Image 1 (cartoon, rainbow, N blue to C red):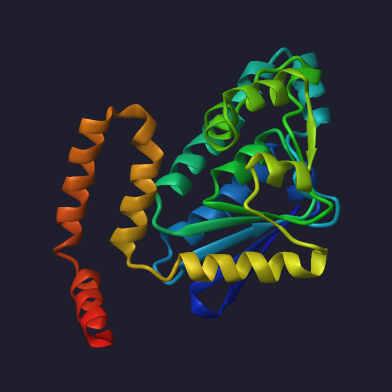
Image 2: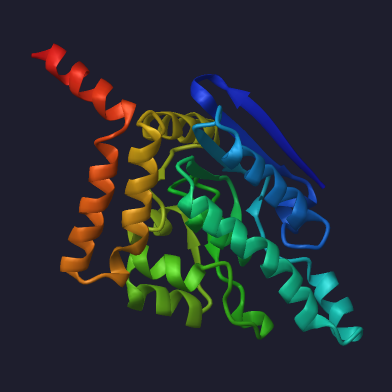
Length: 256
């Protein structure tokens, strides 16, 4: 069980899930390690963009099924599920709210909570070997990891409904065509290069710009148009006080 991190130029951190952290991400052993590594990147002011990837056949492939069976035998399955979601769900909220740009470089299977991890990122790049799966229905579970909130926003409600209730497995190409993945690369060699380039490009903007933009996109469906306009007004007024705004205006005028 390992999570490897590497700091790259331009404030980009690469986080690679390896071993059981990739193949059985959501266990009592792996989940705290993954959450801690992502949290450290988010709170580090030197890290502007985070690229998350896996190893071999797995990006992040959900729960430890043996642990599920042990919890059933011990009559504590609800407690195990509660323990894991109590770590995963706050982490996903932090990712969505943080100004740090997160990009999932999906090299293999993203399933269950691992799918939620990928969908919670700001962007997704997939290799030809990528697979997206819910995998809840086949075990008699309902979805978690924000997947029923995130996926319909990307692909539409009915496509998401079919995905969950037909227990579909999407290839990287299908996921791209539906809109769940932003970029499909031609081979594994291009996966990290593309994901890192995307993280670098998206993370170049000021902290307020990134944080406010992510926030507005996160809450838009909860607002009527008038309320959302007021919310935009409040945030753009706040942006007018930042150094990034002052520098940006000065730089723009110099171009003329």
